[in-house]
Length: 464
Ligand code: PMP
Image: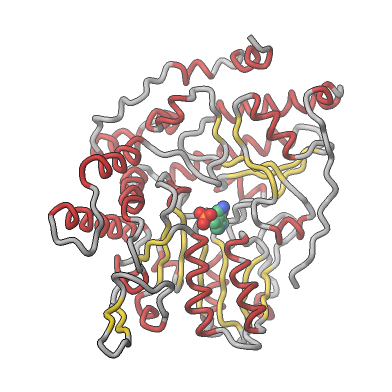
């Protein structure tokens, strides 16, 4: 047996995982799940996830990239393909009608989940498509030379590149809300950043790179005060806390299913009902308009206008199942649970030599779900490779959020991100492995394991 594997076994908590039985949730109803979940330890949710039960030694800390899927979601999708699959919208036979009904039920569940109405929920492939949708439709129609689009420096490229491209094309200007040195959002110059020239504020509710939660209330109020519309990127917030669209007071909102237990290929674009008539369709095709005899189109007065072609209805129904699962979770408790992991990770890493943690540490200890860090003398890829040998999956790089990487001066970080099935034991184990890595690095044993390359810092072009 490999020495590394023996080392891995020496961590007693793995015994916990080994005793779990897979598949035992198959017969549990939603009702019983609800009763159990609100009282039971979150760590027990691990057994709801077939991949995690099939890999008892896996420590999955890449949840901000994508979460694992519970058995309920997998079963829902499998059952559709095995028993009730037919294209929706056009067929008048039973199978098609039932699939169509299930798709609309998924829309209702999704709307309810964020306190919107079903008429405001457009299914897209993910947050990226949702933002590109608005840039190519509302943005193309509205933005003109001299207009300003306000973002924050925290944005994921999905909420930067569509606006950058639009601004270049239309000779508009991008402006950025900065951060303080600790990664919290800096609101001190809001009045000079969001002016009457602003047509749109497009901002994240939670940073995927360093975990900052911008205080959106004040920023959104300011944008509306100057007559700008507001798009919020909820890709890193909806999976972790209750979002109330009405309370948030936004015009557009996007998030991705795969980051909240749902399948890939499904996401949500919320467009406020009163704005929908002004927004042209993103794509033209089946089911979204009536083609008149004189070749003019009359668009449908419903979300169908925005969902040309066969929609990702199986994925959407899978998303409905994910929402059913999440509805059994007490989100306040989950937030506390994940913040405990962040606190332990931050406090553990802080004790180690050469570690830099990026982002608002105090904020993360209270309501974070991820921690980004680097270790002096080691590239993040080397750290990730080392952790991988111990069964720990983490993400490295700039996390597609280049602006904040430039501002805080890192090239790449290691990001650990947690979800409801993770445990404090896993955090302890992770810290133990990192400690071992640093020890070995000190004595240079690692040179034999890796071809260590300390990368030069990227020279970042500032966007303004
Ligand atoms: N915004 C944020 C904050 C994200 O974390 C991500 C995914 N990393 C996206 C947008 C893009 O999401 P998707 O790739 O699912 O479209």
